[in-house]
Length: 107
Image 1: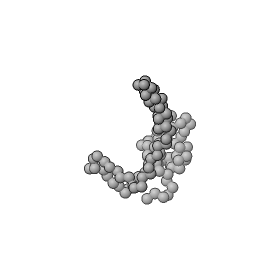
Image 2 (image 1 turned 135 degrees about the horizontal axis):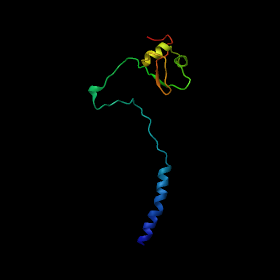
Image 3 (image 1 turned 45 degrees about the vertical axis):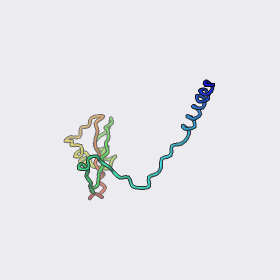
């Protein structure tokens, strides 16, 4: 009799695991604004300054500063200034940071 109980438990176990695995996990949608909590509040800063993100571009064979600048809508001079370049020599695989496009809407 003892063996029969064990067999029933062992036989039911895979069915219970399958039933649990097939249930979708539902995460509730937050109804409040998340709050940033920090362990070191003295290091937390708040700013209202506009954050400007820079894109990175990896130089490919055949690229020139002129082609890259035109492709991103910036000037060669701005591209050189952004990357601290004193000449127009590029290395294949070199990473260039692209400045914001000078579309006349700057501050």
